[in-house]
Amino acid sequence: MEQVIVHDPSWMKFFGEGTTFILWLTYIPSRILGLSYFTGNILFGFLGFIGIRYVFVLVYKYFPTNHEILGIPLYPTVFYITNLHFWTSGVGKDAIAFWAIAWFLFSIQQYKEKWWQASIAFFFVYMCRPHMGQALIGGAAIAIILGTDINRAYKFGLASLALIGSIYMSTYTLEALKLEDFDLATLEAFSSSKSGNLNTIKVGSGVNISSYSLPMKLFTYLFRPLFFDAHNIVSFISSFENLLYLWLSLFIYKNWSVEALRDMPLFLKAAMVTFIPVTFAFMNALSNLGIAMRMKNMLMIYFLLFCLYLIVHKKYTLHLRNLDRKKFFQRRQAIIDAKKKNAT
Image 1 (cartoon, one colour):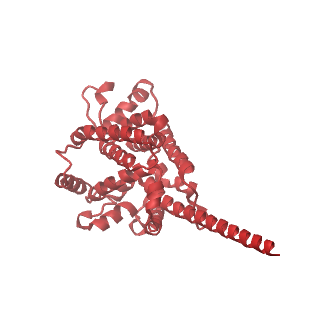
Image 2: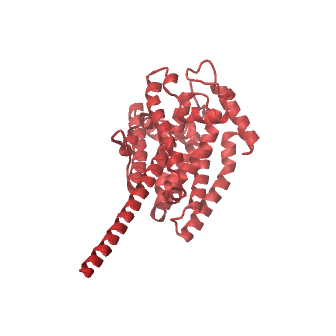
Image 3: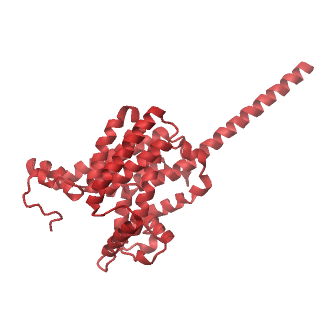
């Protein structure tokens, strides 16, 4: 069954957003070079690996320390999560979107040298999934404005560019999603429509989210399937990952601080500002746990890293305070010893 019907199947006839972009992207390797589907999976999987490497390098460079659970260091263990690699290892929008988002965040973190790369990465994100591109450019603009470690001249230029790009692209995003505007009533109707299409008896992992409260919808999207939802080996393995997400999220309240948000690297700020509206949209639209796992894979790693950053920032801050306290008592003891020596 064809997902996209093209009457004149030449290369540029495939150019467009979503699935058609993947067809356009793979046209030359497949139709002209004659590469097999297996080779395509290898190439797309390599892009997914590059995306993971971008995030890996950012964490290594900008996180102050590490944290262990049951003697296991979270870094780099979190990069071995099964779904992170499963959805980014084959031909499709998932690998391209994940790679391009990671590339975009990697570029804006090093904006002085790589700002131009962010525009190329944004092109791939938007063409794969317009709504993700819209959320990403808006999130980057807000993160740049709120960033405290960015030179004012760069901040004004980058924020203006991101805001203008977000406003300009909003028209094309509405057209791609077949919406009239971004008001709450339109988005709610769109979400209800998507939810109804996915919540059918033919969908094995479907749940009826229409009867759920907002907190339950949020919990379902972020942390399910859990073990009681598992109906096959994939959902069973995913339960361990979701349990890790749930466990780390419990540390947000305990480790949250204004200083942590202030010191948070730009790439993580942008990712989390993007994560919030995307999560709100998807939790109201996706009533299939399998599809939810696939869609949240683009940004869920950043939520995990957000939780980890809060933990390690507090840990590092307490370490610095203990060092300062130790130095204070050492200086105090030195003064006391000097007075005793002078007295004798």
